[in-house]
Structures are given as C-alpha cells and as structure tokens.
Image (cartoon, rainbow, N blue to C red; front, side, top):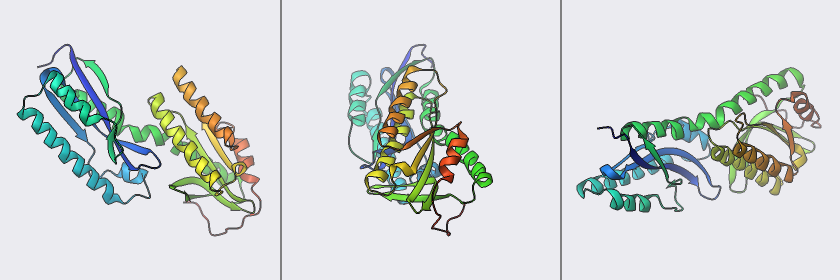
Length: 286
C-alpha cells in the first residue's frame, strides 16, 4: 500500500579500499521506513567493473570479498529486524548503530531523510540510480571527453607525444592521461570537470585530485611548474558549486601548479609544447 506521507531514512554505502587516501566509491544504499518496520538495501554486484577500474591498483578480490561479507551482514540484520518486528524508534536506533561513522573498507555516508509518495522498493531503486549507477558517469564522463579532445589536438599540434601513465607518490598510485618525460622532469596535464550531480560530489572529486597533485609535488615526482590542471567551471548556477570550484582551483594555485581554463586550448597546447628535450622515446599513445 502506498502511503501519501511515507518517511524514509537512507545512507549511501561506500567502498574505501585505501583508508589512508580517503578515496571511495558509492556501491549501495540502505533504506528504512520506520513506521512500517522495513529495512531494505541494494548493493552493487560482486563483479562491478566500474569499481575495480576506478581503483586500478587494487586487488579485485578485495572488492568481491568486501561486498560478500557486507551483504551477508545486512541480510542478517534485515532478518533480525523482521523477526523482532522492529519499527519506529527501535528500528531507527538499529539504523543509527549500523550507519555510525567508522574506519573500515565498507562504511556509510551521512544519513539523509526523504518524504515521498512511493513504495520503499521504488524509492530504494531511485536512490541507487542517483548515487551509485550514475556516480561514475558524473565523475568521469565529461573528463573522458576532455581527454579525448586534448588527445586529438595534441596529435595535430605537437611533434612529441604525451602518454597515459600510472604514477606513484607515497601511498597514492593513480593514472594520469598526459605524461611526458623531459629534460626538466615529468610534465603532466590533467583535465578536471565540475559536472557532478551535487556540490558535495564535485568537492570530493576535486579535492581528491588536489591531494594527488600535492603528493606528486611533495614527493618531488613532478615539479609544480611542470604540471597543469585544465578546468571547466560548473554549469550549475548554484553558489555551493561556485564555492567548491573556488576552493579546488585555489588549492591548485596554492600548490604552484599551473591552472588553465579548458576552453583556452591554445594555452594548453603552448604548455604541452614548451616541455624541453624529449628523453623517453618509448612512450606512445594508449
């Protein structure tokens, strides 16, 4: 039966394989309907290429085992709530304990509430589509387009080539789309978009790359003047997105890293071209 005023509480399940770096992926939703005594959940499949591709350096078995164990835990909790007919304050108390902040591979984001004229299962699916299924598209799709555009431009404008490479700086290990060895050291270019669904997602994505760039600079893997971030401002005309954009770009500039608007392709090409003698002929487009 559909209640016109169904109140739900939910939390996003996060997978964070490397606690030191704080990088995570949204992999599920747990939702409760206190009045009806319902606790339901949806977790990504054990074989979820988007997650394993996102964390390239991760052992794929880690994700599979984490999801299996976490799903079993949720199933047991769901059965307990049903068997004991928990609802209202009792169910809310169980949910609070489940979602409390903890340092672990599988944990939860903040608890949110929503009032909806929909069945719990439909609400769960909507939230899953919003926070999990589309999360990777929001974070990566536009940046992939930016990479493709730069790659085509560089192929036509540059005599030398940049390649996609994995770099390691302390606890960080990640892939950059444009890397080139020069007589002045590594020169890198990274497109960065702010087209995520929410300002919080944009902040998490942007600050993740700030921390990665900071690690490269602090470990002397890349000199700040040899790095460029090509940014595309958020299209959403909201103050919170502007604040995120200003914070991220300000942090990039504080590191001494070059910052350029993506639309200024000629300036990006000039940076890419002015890179000294090419000393690694083995690199190629990937």
